[in-house]
Every structure is written in structure tokens, then in C-alpha cells.
Amino acid sequence: MRVTVLFLASVLCICGSAFAQDWDLYTSNEDGFKLDFPGAPKMTQTTFKSEYGADLPAHVYTATKGAEKYSLTVVDYREAPRLLDEKAKLTCPKDYPDERSCGLTNAGRGYWKEDMAGAVLWATYGFLQRNAKLTHLAFAWQDLVAGHELQLLNPDQSRTFAFISMHTDRLYILEGTVPRGFPPPVLFQQSMGYVDKNGNGMRYQSIYSDMYAEHPDVFPGQPKLTGQGRGGGAGAPANGR
Image (tube, rainbow, N blue to C red; front, side, top):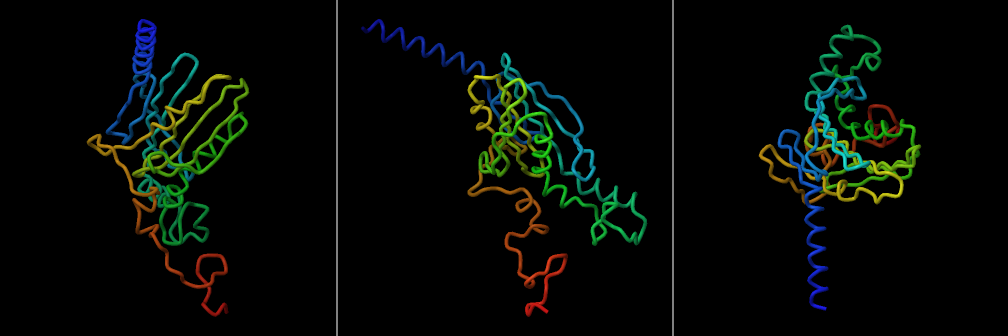
């Protein structure tokens, strides 16, 4: 009996060691994240086009484990305000009557506020354009950073699990695809975390929203009531007239 127990303990130890060798915590100080990958991921550079047409720099981290595929795309939105403002100035004549059609707000600036606030939704929309069946879509958070959680059933019956978030003006698109009958990539999806420029983990006391946290002048925590509202830009007078 003692020999059997020792043998089983040895097997469990070996299996645990093998699993630990398959999955490693990868940290990028530059892109501000930490995430478990099945081995060191390969990083490539690309360009991501935002909803309002800004060409933004992005890094794609990919790794595979047999037929399983894992990736994280990090899009840097920090230059979006400058890029969209410059685009608006180049494409719109002064005092152009139709400001929205050429990318200006009434304040004469590019639509970077809408672009950044809608970045998670824009990336989610990209998944919905795929040749796949959406089986799950929900609000979620990883490490208390808010985002969208998706599941797709692909034509070959493989399944894709995704999580999309925005943190410190960076868009994170996490995606794991496993063959039919394989368990979901829970370890990959739930290991998502965020780090500062020194690689230190960042943990919040409540759910984090990028635009409220990083742009309080644009999205104040508690907006003031200006009237009863009739739609459009300005609030209605308090008496409704």
C-alpha cells in the first residue's frame, strides 16, 4: 500500500511538472500585461485601423499547443487623439457646414473621444463579422478591468473564446481557439493581468473603466444634470418648454 501511494504521488508530481513546463507566465512591461501562454509567445508588429480611421500601432503575441491556438493583440490608442485631430484638420475646410462627415465635432476636434470610448465594442464587432456562430456574449472583467467576453463556434466545430478590454488607453484582444471536444482555455483567459512600466501588477479596488479612469475631464465620474432632455446635444429647460 505504501509503495502504491508513493507511486501515485510520483505520477502526480511528474504531471504537475509537465503542466508547469507547458504553460508560463509571460510579462510585457512595454505593452502592460501579464498572461499565461503555452510556451514563450512570438511577437509581431502590425497596424490596427480604429473605427474612425486612425492607423494605430499594435503588437500580436501568438503561441500554439498542438492544435490549440492562442493570441493577444495589444493596440496602442494613446496617439489616437493626435492622429484623429490631424486627420480632421487635413480633410475638413474651415467652417465646413457638415462637420461629422469629415470627422469633426462641434468643438472642431476629431472624433477621438467616441473612437476610444467605443474601442472595445469596435473589436467585438470584428469578431461578429467572422464566419462563425456566436454562442456567448457578455460583459465581464479580468483582474477587475471591464470588457466583453465572447464565445464562437467555428465551421470546423472548433471553439473560440475571447476577452476584450481597454486599460491605460491600450486595447487588449485575447483569443484562444481549441478543437472540437477540447476543454475551454480557461487558464489562458482567466490569467489576464495588467502591469505598470516596471512590471509590477496593477490591481484595483473596484471595476476599472478606461475612459473614466484615464480621461476624467471627458467622462467625469458623476455627470451633472442639465435639464429634462429632448434628445440632441443640449438639455431641455427644467420646465420642459
